[in-house]
Every structure is written in C-alpha cells, then in structure tokens.
Length: 478
Image (spheres, one colour):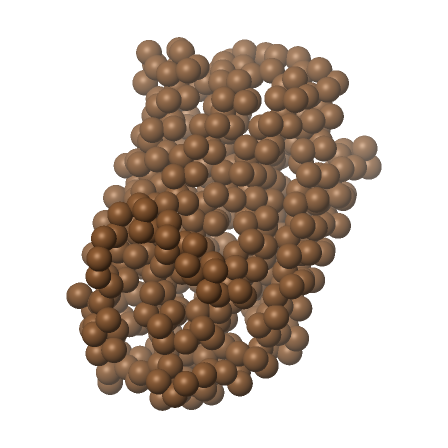
C-alpha cells in the first residue's frame, strides 16, 4: 500500500494510535461508553425480528404471506436508505469533522418503536389496515435506526488502530450488543405474554423504548470521545460533491461492491448469515408454542441463544489472534449448521436436546457477529486512502445488507408457513393447526436455516484477505 494511505495521527488528548496494532492505548472508559450504545441497538435488532411476525399473525390476524410482506417491503427500502445515510455521514464528517449530528438524530427511534406496536383498536380490527399501520411505522423506525447505526458503525474505521485492534473495539461492542439482545429477547416475550392483547405489546415497547434511548445517548458520548474533534486535512480536502439522491446512493453501492472484491464476498456471505439468524428469531415463538408445546419457553431458548456470547466473545477474540478471523468465522458457520439441525428433534427426546442445540447456536452467534463486523474495516483500509475517505458508504452498504437479511429471513419463514397452511388468529382466538402447518413450522426452523448458513459458508470460503495480508499491507501506528 502507498505510504499516503497510512492513517494520520490523531490530535493529542483524543486517542493515541496503537503502535502494536492491538488498540490497547484506546481509552477504556471511552471505549466502554461507545460500546454501551450497542445495547439500545440490540433491542431494536432483536424485538421486531423476534415478535413482529408473530404479533401480526397471532394477535392482529394477518395472514402469513401478507405479514411476511409487511416485514420485507420496508426493509427493501433500506437498500437505498442505508448507503444514502452513509454518504450523508461522509459529507458531515468532511464538513463538520464528525458524524455526530446524524447519530444524535437517530436517538428519536424510541417513539417510532412504540408506535410500531401501538395499533389503535379500530385499525387492529381490520387485518389489512393493521398491516399497513405496522409497515408504515416500520419504515419510519428503520430510517431513524439507520441514522444512528450507520455513523455509529463507521467509528472503528475512523479510528487509528490496526487489524487486531479493530477486533478488540468490536469485541467490546459485541459484548454490549449481546446484553441488549438478551434484554430485548428475554424481556419482550415476558412483557408481551402469549400475544393475547395489543396492550401487552405496547407496555413491552414502552419499557424497552426507554432502555433503548438511554443507551443510544450514552453511545453518542462514547463516539465523541473516541474520535478527533475534526476530520484530518486530507479528508476535508476531498469532501464529497455532486448530487446525493437515491440514484447516486445506488450507484455508490454498485461502485464499492465492484471495486472491493473482499468486501463484496464478505457482504454476500453476511447477507445469508443475517437472513439465517433472523429467520431463527422469527421462528422461535412458533417453535416453542407448536413443537415444544411451551409458549413461555421462548424466553428460555432466547436466553440460551444469546447468553453464551457474553462468555465466548472474549474467547473468539483470543482464538482469532491465533488462527485469524477467517478460520474462526468458518468454524462458527459450520457449527451453526449442526446446531440448527439438532433442533429438528423437537421435544421427542425431552427439552435437553433443544436447549443444548440452542446453546451451540449461541456460541456460534457470537462469532457470526464479531468477525464479519470486524472484517469490514479491514477490507476498507486494505483498499487504500480513497476508500477510507468514504467509509460511510461502505458502512451504509453493510448495514443495508444486515437490514435486508433481517427481512428476508422472516419472509422466508412466513412463506414456508403459508405453504404449509398455517392459520392466522386474532388475539384470544384458538386455532388448531394442520399436520402440514406443523411440518412447515419445524422444517422452516431447522432445515432451512441450516441450508442458508451452509450457503454462507460456501461464499465465505472464497474470502482471501487474512490476518497476514492485512498486517503486511497496513502498517500500525503513525
């Protein structure tokens, strides 16, 4: 890499470059505050994915095929929205020296999150109207979430740390994100009950909405402390110019994917990974109610899925120091396939097998989140200074990929339910499902995610940017 592509040293008092590449000199207090912003993000990533499909089909009486579209169409908008927000954040950094204005605007997410579930009674009485209400507020919430998520995730690339240093920063973030996912995944089903009323969902959204906004605000302070007060001179000199509409955003998506082959492969693999994990979230309430015959067990399995990440994320980081991120990611993907198939046993051998299989998925989930996110800055910095200067565009493409996966997974599961003849129900109604519906619930929750993750593994095998290449091409320190 050309010498000009080296990161510039940051002003004194903000952050010292990590000469050893580990990011060890990054102020821990600022790093913790930055990571805490992920707690609120974890709630929003988890709760709609876990409960929104079930809320639509088993509380509002929306048929599975329409409920799947309600989740899919707003997320398809994110294909343009996230890269557009990424470009805006690059322009903000060039003009103002940081991305904080967009980040702060995203803190308005909580009211939209509450409105998502607060369907008025006259609207809730008509499934089509209820579906339109949820879809509309889902778009609003996604816009606000993108305003926070895109500039927030650009932070590790904006920092002057090396290959393993970025993994360290993302490992802090992953552990706190896990707490947010655990809080959302465990509390949401408890507060919502068995979906017997819209009011229970509103209470759930209010409680978790407050949790979300508090930690978002803390995260804004962490980003402010980690990064320089103004952008480097080279960045300000090449501030993006020209039209920045949706068409330009799509053109930038095509450009970054065309120019950066490692990033393209990583993005495609993560699209399949995100689809898989969100499919599992969406299918969990159906699996516990109809296959395990224990609706309240959703909280238990959700905790088993998320809690291992708190313990295994530091271990995954240590393993990546020895084996590299790529090998560890492939191990996580392969083990996830085995764990997903293990859930196919249902309760035939007791509850121990589903719990153990879910714990395996949870250990894998930690690696599936840590390594791809920490590899994105590697692909950007490996591409040189010109690509570093549009980090927001890369982050926008990446978060759009995650958002589309978050919609594709539940949509695929809803399609399987529709093919199996799953019958929707209004709050308080009892519906007997057919054998075909039970088969769809089980196969969609086990075999389908195993196949999707196997596809992700196959794509990831083509990724060639390993730790040695990154070390050789990016000198650490000023």
